[in-house]
Length: 229
Ligand code: PGA
Image (tube, rainbow, N blue to C red; front, side, top):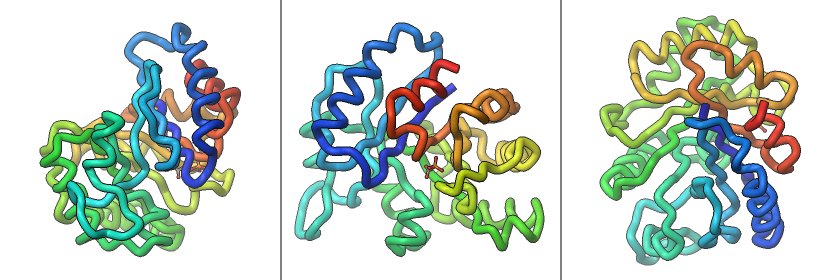
């Protein structure tokens, strides 16, 4: 299983360091073959001496240049960052990233050899139309994406399940993941209100290769509950 923690706009540099040091103390308990990735806010990126992958939640598809407020590959290289989240629904919906821009970003970071966690997910009104509509919608989020790229993972995160406390049901996750795997044969994470009380049933679903966790990743105790379940 892959356990990815997305801090979003939470934690400081100092609290991230404390968090990672605490996590590191439990590293030996992690099952062989399992993997932990942490995505802190950009100000907390550093060269940490830990056995986890540190990635960024976002970056601009450029080496360096005039992109006020953005961070390019030059800044990531200083900290050996080679993993990035692309397509998260908060960037699509709140920050207004279009599929075209997301595809541009994907292809740029692909050319740079980054490991990409590519996020997709449908809004509630699409889920309410049924499974077929969901798959059709999700497939549009692969427009312009090279799904043959070997260093990428997909995270399926229904928008209505993110930060709401209401995860998708086991049936919904199972059928969407099964269907998605028919089209895109990549490791597939589920995200959306994953927590201690539902990790056992979610991780037991066929074709769930891992989880992308927001809220429950913010404290080491609650994240360890998932990672060591
Ligand atoms: P959540 O967020 O676990 O707080 O629902 C998941 C995500 O947005 O990656």
